[in-house]
Image 1 (cartoon, rainbow over the protein chains, first blue to last red):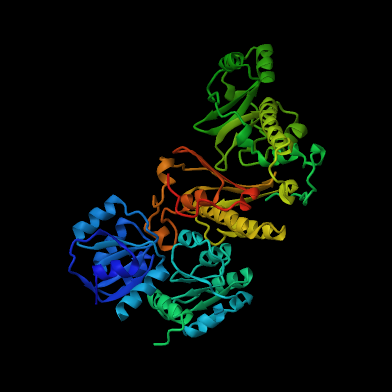
Image 2 (image 1 turned 135 degrees about the vertical axis):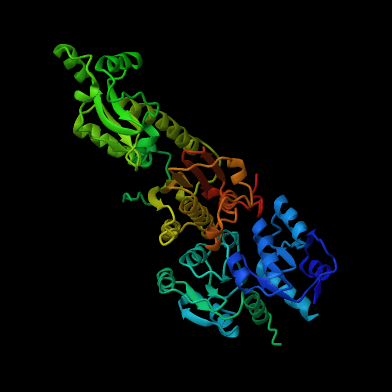
Length: 111
Length: 114
Length: 329
């Protein structure tokens, strides 16, 4: 179980939208293909992606992902922020790439 | 660790083995977005992706990758293997998800055995 | 694709005689569409020959295409008008007297093609059609002369800049020249990326610095994929001359409504299908900008887009001050 604060700390991330600071993720899924996320992402996970797009929020909501971690510090467009607030999905962003972010989250789970 | 060694360490299956597999992996990218892969400035990169298409190989070749691992147990189309041979680029598959794949590569490269 | 001989690594020299033949390169590089007149005055089939004569007088041209809604039906030349005056049928519609056996050019053809046509057919002008067989312009020898003069002056200035006592270090590549052209088709994902791969190989064969090759390949690949995903199709060219690599992507449409927006990181018009292929994350043009020393884009909605990226060989020797992520505008 990882809290938003732990994700922020381990990935050197910035919190962009946090509708519920109390959520805890139980898994991680790394993908930039929304169809893949839709098909394979586990519930209550943190989604690691570079897709800074409103549709990412929609897909996260569908599969029950709680947090979207956007890599490469890509700018989060206003409409994505609005969608996340409405859907209750948190958005964090990190300067790391998907590989390093995944490795950090793995270490966070182990700690 | 060379690309071939990493593939073996994460339990992947080599589909096309070329001389790039003998190169040391110094950088890992786990992306499904080709433009994102092209942002990589480092040489000797290995790519983990859940996308199985010719474009993945062409993109990897442009940035001089050591090899590509297709994750999620995705079947590799014959045409893709042909393109890999044509480009002289090693190609492997893995039944891990991309997250698991990244973690496995991380553990392999850092000598973590648990 | 035009196969052309390479002038391989000509030793650097201040003597302009040793430069590649600029004119040959120009007439290969320029396309009919770069030269033709696009402001067309056309006659309809029912227009009378007298009205056509008036058009000719007004704008001092000696040939008027007969076309309706972009479809070309014929051409009226000054000779047709003279014959009409002599024969007394100047008030008849041009449909009856126009030449219908037309030799036409396509806008995509290299200028060298047009020149050979003027030589072969001895006509004063040729109508120009696009790939959908629609009339898009007309070309006469005057257009060619004018464009070549402008381009030659421009080229001369560049050569002077390179040879004229600048203290910039000259490298072995400064005398190298080659030019290649690759067609890119819409949604042809099977072949997309081949142009960039070929360009990479060509530069590798000539032992260009690895980092430059990578930057050129990235720019070429993004532009190639852009045309494949977003445009109706186009042409990617790679030209190496004067110590520069120039990649130009020119497509036939549909054009970009907001160019500034399109160059910003994350801006995308791609649909989910394109995203599912690993493209369309709005990183393409910012990526090209990132690797290029000069970047230029020209586009208009409803027309084509032209993107030019220049990578300077000498810039490879300098440390790269801007590391990453400068991308957006």
